[in-house]
Length: 469
Image (spheres, rainbow, N blue to C red):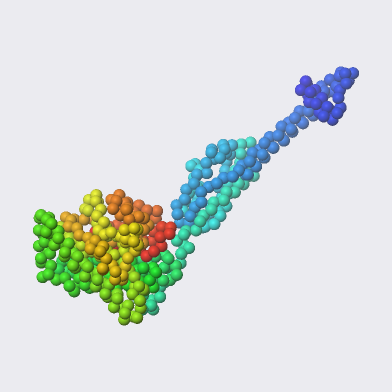
């Protein structure tokens, strides 16, 4: 009764109707009247209901207005993000549903509060969270909060793949891949036109050539990267590689190799200054002539075509290999920024078989088409030699592979970078694309070609990788 009396008195006071002393008994009787007691009770209950409704509405609005950021995604790239109700302060959300994920490639795990999948479409995806909070009726209409998830397009899809002109006199396939024998080992080579060229329908500028010279027991492999600034470099790289193979095929024979075979045997049994000098002399004499022969062939072609030699600018690396009873003799030569890497049998050591024409040492990229290369006092340092019992991989690559996978020249001499590169080749990459280096696998060349589609921002040049394994 006292509560009812205070409530009515407060209500009347708000209306500027104060109770005078002489009306106290009358007011007491009025406040105790059953009808008035019931009326006050109804009013108080309605006020309480209004307050609770306001608290609910205010809380729901707080959730609706709350900023919730979720990481952006990319089409065709695995996505995962947690919508953490606890961290968001949504402990009072008692039931919810996620809508708007249909045909997006994404789904939501309610138990883990995890949004995951592989996005299939780009754009601003509107994800609806339908929810009820504690205090709302079970049959009440769900509240709707919209989250925006930005899915960026697959950067690969932004690049066109326009075929090069097959009617061009110097046309060659945009992609090439081959698997074959190399001595008693295998060789796989893939050469792929870069996205920057595919986007405008221009040509693959890289090239390669190899041959097993069975009569003399040697095998030759050459790789060349045509300069992007030279309009006919695709032909320059082609001429360079084939010229090297032609030179050794025409100029090496069993008779003139007998002495070198004996020198290698003597060197294996006991290395001396004399055997080292004889080997260096042989390597220099034969490989330098092969390189110069390549230069001459390009020069002749340029003259016959009445075209400047610089239009055929191309790098050149090559290796000449023979297997002996006591191991493998590996001879190398290099002009330009394409590395040759030799990995020993148990993958514990890497031997970089050439230095690159990059940075301060090289003074910038050089090409086999430059006559001054052959007069330079550094020319004699362009040759490499290694006599090794056995090896796991001998790799020749253009900068389309070297730049994204090794980044800087110093990494080419770090075994951990090469083992990481091998792991990448074997499937440890974003795409899960792998090359199975099983000699009985007939799909190695196709697998290597597919692997070479890897995405690397800013690296869209031609890619050529030759692996002897």
